[in-house]
Image (tube, rainbow, N blue to C red; front, side):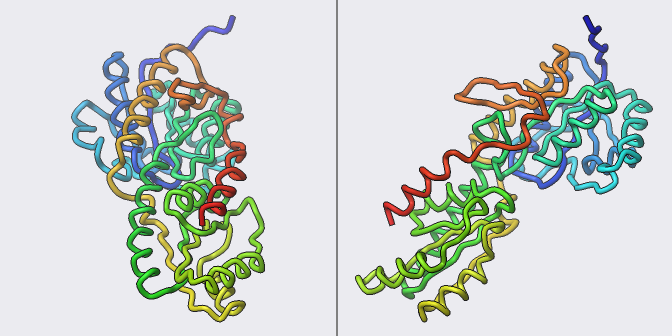
Length: 325
């Protein structure tokens, strides 16, 4: 049996796009680690900060009053250098120099790829916490930040709807989601939008415009269509609809506003549970894994299996959106 490495000091970092709830996860990792008498080091600016040795000691007061704050106090970044063997070798050297025995990575698909490489290629004990508003990781029902991002989008769309109805216009609302349509689908259904465009399905502009024109003839005075940024750009959709129907169509891009803001209760709870679970997984010698919650129970899978989730809910969501328009 392979002997478990002795863990005395853990590092924690945030990588990739930020999301509401990351600070709550950091708080849980730090305080859980300290409660188990581990040293905890915070790594600034993700993998790039690790390469550049931007590491600070974390104590219980380091994470005071951050559970309700959006973003991440450790900052976050994407690192092209870390994608190379040379960059990873530099990161590993820093970890060893600073006496960091295990690493907790809070992030999404690319962050998990980096954590998996550190474990598989370099033997660094790693654990992944799913921090991405896109909710596009396998092994968890929700990822940190997705609940708040949906609520932020809904708040904006509810306001746009007032104008859409008052001025009898078609509005195209672009939400985040480069390769995943999860946010767009959930937002469209919860907002009562008439249609949705996502990266997983090619947009059918002819069918869309036919439905708009049919509704217009029946007295339907406004339409709301949600599009994921990776499915189609709002300006392109709006111009296409105007050209095909002659009806005035406006585009609204929510963009990075969806990443910010105070995390909702669901995101704080998920972050806190997974932050503690990450420390406990390390203490148990469970490395190279990603954590999640499925049906309210902790779920642990290999990092290599966590990077892509099935989109089997999309067809059902799409059916409901179009039935209820």
